[in-house]
Length: 259
Figure 1: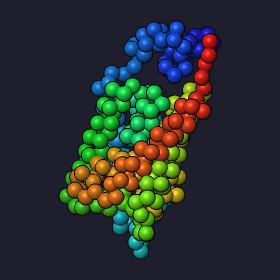
Figure 2: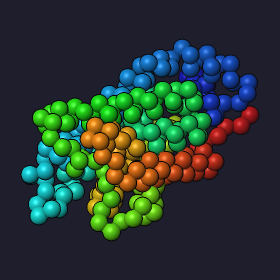
Figure 3: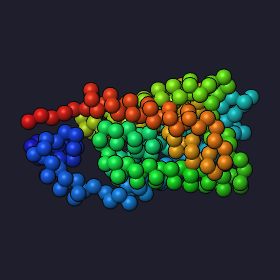
Figure 4: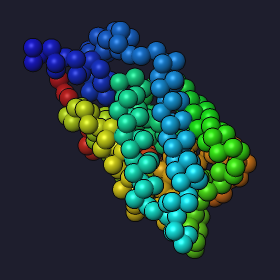
C-alpha cells in the first residue's frame, strides 16, 4: 500500500518524476485530470465570486464599513479572505484553485501547470473578473463601482506601489506553493491557509495599495467602470511577486526525488 502511494505521488507530479516514470505519469494524468473546459469553468466561477464580493463589500457596504473616510480593514480583509478560502477549497481538485493570473503565471513558471492550460485559465480568470465587476454594478443598480477598484493610497507612487504589491503577492504565492503544490502538506486545508494569507495581506497593505495581489481583481471592475487607476502597479507588481515566489519554491524548496 505504501508503495502504491509513492508511485501515485511520482506519477502525478512531473517535477518529481524520473524520465522512466514519464509514460506512466502521462497515462495517469490523462485518466484523472479534469478536462480543460472544466478547469476553465472552475477558474471563471471562483474569480467571479472574488471580484463580486470584493466590489460589493467596498461599495454596497460603504455606509457601514466606512467611518470618517476610514475603511474597516478587518471586514474588508475577511470578505476577501473568506471568499478566496472557500472558492479555492471548492475548485482545488478541479483546477488547483488558482483564481489569480499571478498565481497561474507563477505555477507555469515552475512548470506545475502546462502552458496551454495556463493560457486557458488566464482567459477564464479575466472573463470571470469582468463578469464579477458587471454583476456587482448591476446589483447596485448601475451605480459607480469606482470605490471597488484597487487604487494607490495617498502619497504612494508607482514604484512603491509595485514594490508593495510584489511583496504581498510573493507571500500569497509562497503559501499557494507550500499548501497547494507541495505534496508534503497534503493540500487538505490549503484553501483556508491561502484565504488567511489574502486577509493578512489586506490588513498590512490595504491602506497603501488596497492589496489587490491579483491582476483580475483590479482589471475586472476597471473594465466595467471604464477607469484604470495605476495600471502598472496592479499588472506588473503581482506578476513579479508571483514569479519570484515560484522560482524560490522551484529551485530551493520543492521536494525532489532521485533514482
